[in-house]
Length: 115
Image (cartoon, rainbow, N blue to C red):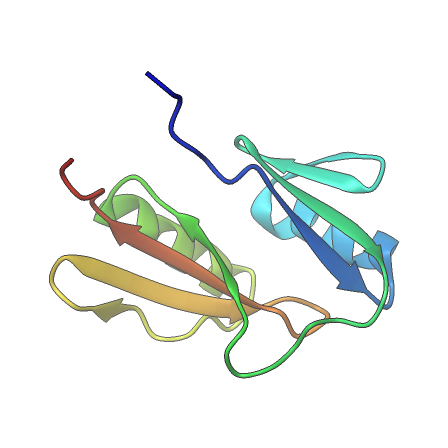
């Protein structure tokens, strides 16, 4: 049987890559290795460039439970990062926050669909 896919990394352009990498380390607990940030198995590669900021583009971190989502929301509030209101749509809960370059980052909980 062929292995199912799991997105492993995202390339993120930034005007100030080093400053943005440090922001993710400081606020999200990612580990920095060169241009890459390692965040619990996901990798964000931050490189020099023009940020991709528009009302439709974002990326997200899926959390394992609604409780973890609430803990992250509180953590970002405590860090004065101004996350959006926590929205509850029953089987899908979400909030977002912007990084230093204006990228929209979603935090969400949703069960994986059955096969």
